[in-house]
Structure formats: structure tokens, C-alpha cells
Length: 110
Image (cartoon, rainbow, N blue to C red):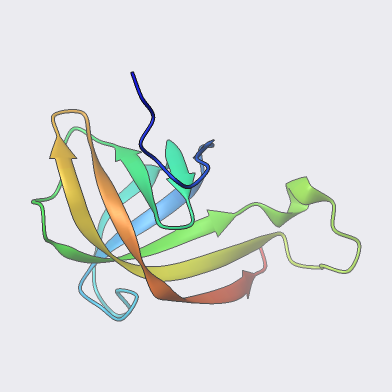
């Protein structure tokens, strides 16, 4: 099968919180706490038995485990990347979320 994707995908399980609405879903109730499967700079696939409808606007908080990267100048254990997104594809076993180009990064101490 011919690969049509132009961006490199990473098969990595990052913790994520999916929230309704925008910007970044702040102040909105969490819809789901999921793990990523395939992720790239333009979006990610989230395995779930309860995928949201295509076209749904969401806020996504990806939790990066900074302690695993052993960065000398970083004191925080984790960082959160917050980005708006839209459900692009819905399947029985998951959903694909396309990310917007704007995002926010915040340090998170444990």
C-alpha cells in the first residue's frame, strides 16, 4: 500500500486530556483521558471505544514526561502542550484529531 502521509508519525503513547470547546478547552469539562497512538505535528490518533463525532471542536492537552528526557536545565517533571483541534476521522476503535497551528506550552511540577 502506498503511504500518502507527508509528515513523519511517531508511535508513542503520550497521556492526553480531551476537552470540549476552544480555546484549548480551558474551563471545560474533560471528555476523555486517553493515550496517543500515532502522533505528528498536525494531529494524533487516539484509540477509544467512544470516539467523538467528526467535526467536533476539542481542546487537547498532551502531557510530555520531561523527566524521561533527562534535560539538565529543566526542573519540572512534566510539560503540557495545549492545542485546539477538530475530530477528522471516527472509527469503531478510535478517532483522529487534527491540530490547529496555534498552541501553548506550560511547565507542570509534580
